Length: 267
Image (cartoon, rainbow, N blue to C red; front, side):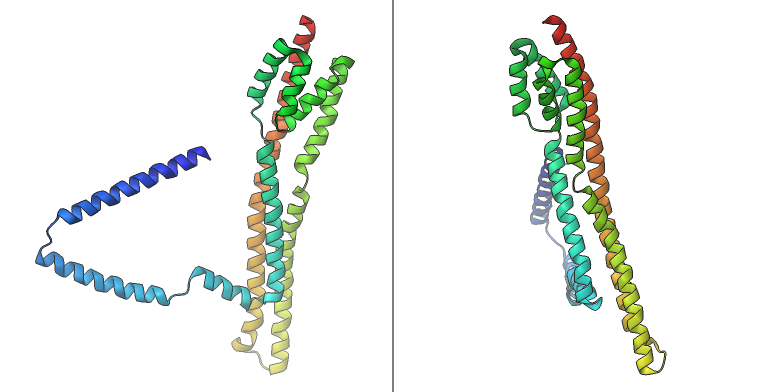
């Protein structure tokens, strides 16, 4: 995030500097009669293009129109699935981001604290550090007096609990991913039924009669697939974050046990 902000800041400064230099060149330059005529012609062209663009609908207007044409009642259900899926995804992403810990730095601080302050100071360090890795270390230190075998069992059992907490909510996202296309295909079936009802009422097959139902069928399918694609990207990102945190938990637990073995031999 810091690199992104720095990059945007540099780009802003560069853009501002280039704009100022161009303005300075325009102020110093003396336009000729030919250049004046070219500027007038370009101005007329831009004005004509601006009029055409102003008449064209915006993306928001097109999206709103297609949403209403697809049947606002049924499309609202698809939109609700998208909103709920995004809400769960954002909550999980925030939780996993806050759960990420610099394990190498934590292990170095923990080793230094153990050598200088002992088990109690190490407990305080783990208690004041955020994340599942520090919580696992704390549970292990709580059982240090019971022996290293109990510490190892505690790490394994509590690590399973923390993994379950990390994976909590992912099943809801997968449910919303499945519901999006299913609702879209249901809308397709409903649209086809409406098309056949219109044909039966008119007693004739014509593009005008069939177009309404077919449009509803296609729009609901498209919006359902878009919902699934967006949530699938979020879901894969969340799974990748969980996998990274779990790997850190396992690797750091091994280093933690080695650290406790070395500390027990010294004391």
